[in-house]
Image (cartoon, rainbow, N blue to C red):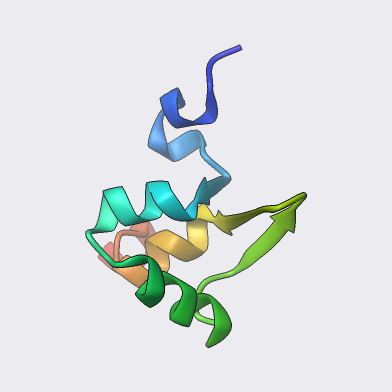
Length: 68
């Protein structure tokens, strides 16, 4: 099975904070502020915090619904 990072973007359901930093050029602290403000949905899996990818796209204005 391919690692999640190798999946096409439209198939992802979650994204790590590190990957969100790379894809958006936002800092880790900004991403954490968005999570704690309730603008980014996330969950903990063990010690990892995973961000809901649809929520990530909405915050960045990348979702297809905002393009319409």
